[in-house]
Amino acid sequence: MAKSKKSAKAKSKAPAKKPVRKVVKLAAKSTSKNTIKSAGKAASKSAKSKSAKPAKSAKKANGNGAYPKPVAKPFGEAGKALEGVRILDFTHVQSGPTCTQLLAWFGADVIKVERPGVGDITRGQLVDVKGADSLYFTMLNHNKRSITIDSKHPQGKRVLDELIKKCDVLVENFAPGALDRMGLTWDYIHKVNPRMIVASVKGFGPGPYEDCKVYENVAQCTGGSASTTGFRDGLPLVTGAQIGDSGTGLHLALGIVTALFQRNRTGRGQRVLCAMQDGVLNLCRVKLRDQQRLKAGPLTEYSQYGEGIPFGDATPRAGNDSGGGQPGRILKCKGWEDDPNAYIYFITQAPVWQAICDVIGEPGWKTDPDFATPKARLPRLNQIFERIEEWTKTKTKFEAMDILNQYDIPCGPILSMKELAEDESLRKTGTVVEVDHPTRGKYLTVGNPIKLSDSITEVKRSPLLGEHTDEILTDVLGFKAKDVAEIKNSGALSAPQKEEKAA
Ligand code: CAO
Image (tube, rainbow, N blue to C red; front, side, top):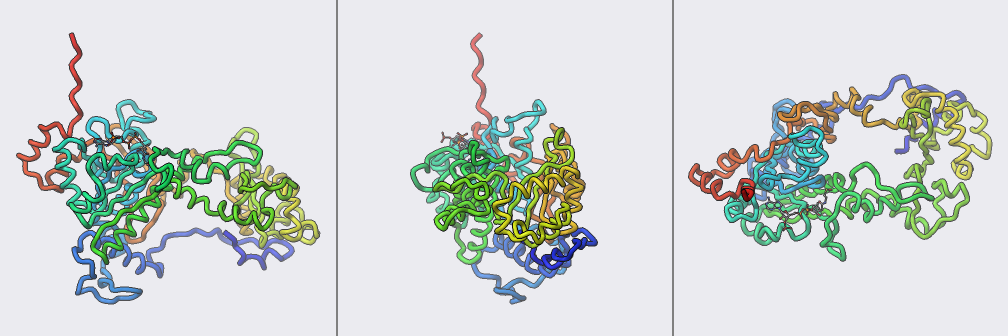
């Protein structure tokens, strides 16, 4: 976060403006392209190669290992990073689907197994278009295929066994024990397909709560986020960012790709477990840092220090203080009286203090011993931010952003979901994408936030329930027409018949 390179500039009497605003582009010609390409190729190879060792024909191109000869195709035209990897996707709700959606975006063939007639419960939650899959579902299940299987039916088990043989990874986020109750224990899966990676999200790791079902806010509360979010004198708060669900899904995706990479060497699969409590705690790492710093005295960068309020024995809630040691606050901007998002986050980063003083019209603070050093400013943060806010209230959040960026003063307007949805630059990069869907029409979604220069993401609509059942049975699993008929007639792939009402 710290941008000390401009500190010399900030010392000058009048702040020097930056001539042009920086635009960061993922340039195909960047020097890192070979690294990215090699990693993608290695991951793709993992699914196809039966051997743990690199192919004999592989040449040592560069870096730490043997790599195939670089392909001659232009970037973005050499297939997807995870092409050839097939995922048996037993996920539902948000955490697991976040993970498998990412893998699908990177090119894995993700086969979502859903309960006949019902599917992922989110298909019917928070419905906004009658009769259509909800946005909750569509926005978490792009680029996947759907097959309906009753996993507890003998014929359903037959299909699942074939999927286990044909897939590289099984991903699930059932309640603890549910997969075992389907007969799909690790021992069983490992016997059927020793190369299979079995990846799970659970609420808690082994311990007193391991059997609990867990949802987003439970994870935020048990992982340290809620106790450190909000204002000191208010309730603990949960955050709108789904750090328990989506955050854990992201962790799981990294675990899976890493296990695939290790399988290149060992030839065998392994279990990958991400507990939501662990994932949230990992994201709250800086707060555990502060917990330990408390032993050495008060946390001087927290506003409560300057306000003379003593610290207790646990990391307190710090309102909108910045977590990185550089004092920051959310400040009102022009229009705040009517617009709930007319605010800007403003960081009084030490290297740009002189520029801040000039911008807000307090040049005397540059040399005043009460304000000139970070230490002197700590007990006066309320006064300082009130003065800065006098300035920000004269500008819209975007005007303030433009002015402050010229001096590398770290800041960020509070952007509403409406503003993000309408942001042209996010559309251009594929971070906000419009998708067409046969039953609900056009909708917006968040595209792949991870951009690879040689594995370009195309966001494809989520599947209808069981849309790909037939093609998976025949093309992927190789069942003959007679077997398909037998499986279908058994009722293993369809919703149970409703009992006829008594006349
Ligand atoms: N065929 C037959 N049965 C199926 C099936 C299928 N295709 N898919 C699921 N089922 C069954 C399961 O086997 C399970 O049955 P039993 O408990 O009788 O063995 C049953 O459906 C319910 O599964 P569940 O317990 O996972 O689902 P739930 O709605 O009761 O709980 C949740 C949901 C999320 C709390 C729980 O799955 C969980 O704790 N998961 C781990 C943590 C997690 O990912 N939480 C994030 C959720 S996102 O906010």
